[in-house]
View 1 (tube, helix red, strand yellow):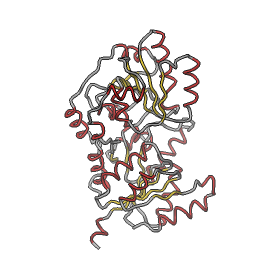
View 2 (tube, one colour):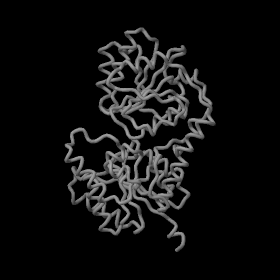
View 3 (tube, helix red, strand yellow):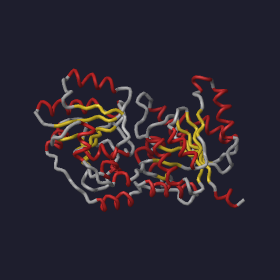
View 4 (cartoon, one colour):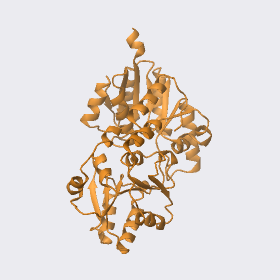
Length: 380
């Protein structure tokens, strides 16, 4: 009876697999799997065997359900209801979907006596086609159905819950975290450059690690690359990632005859290695919450040039992050041409990561405290 009371069940609701949300769940599961915290997952998407095994290690399971747009609401309701009716009453329903899409999950949870329903704000970018009325309605819904609130950063909180709630000391901001141990290793940079890019010279290496989506602003990077070429700068620019706009960007690279400078590496798992060969990391996003890649870049002492639309919470004050306007490419060109590498001591980086709760361990501790109702507010 005692062990039953100590066990905390969490039912995560995520629409798709492979982005920041599944990374958040994975990182927490890895750290908390021996803490009497069990994760179940409801998702519309397939997950990897590795992710599935990790959830199993917590004592939970992954439930793949069908999209109601394809099978109708009745079948969708029956699938979700059959999952929720088996959950203990103290289960926290952790919704990574929000607004109108969260309502069916909320109502089914309530019907089954699952009273802790939490919306997690992950994105700082409002839906581009939404009207002001739709945006206000979204925030009203989120505040009504999520009495407790989670977020990755203040800009995401403003987007999902509204400015008044974001600054009301009622949200637990849990940073997107990294496994610092995988970034704190000594690597053979020369060998990696040859393996990944097939280069053995000292050209400047600039990198982008991002999905090919409008939000990530790859078109802006193409403009910068074209200008660097015109100014006869010796450099390599690689894109790591996949997405709907990848073919469009590949076409633009060919049209502008930039193939000599641009490498498409596809979707990668060797992120620490990619950062280790980079001189400069770029992220000129139109909008962001708290991008984990900027934390990863700092973990490897890599200089980051990022748009000034991105939250300042991602800067650990190591002198490695520069916020630049995306209204003009000139500041980006100047920053690249004036680049001087910085080598920050690993001990200092580790200290900053821990103090900011950017390590998987410190971030998971925050989440555990939230689950156990020991904290109701935390700001990065």
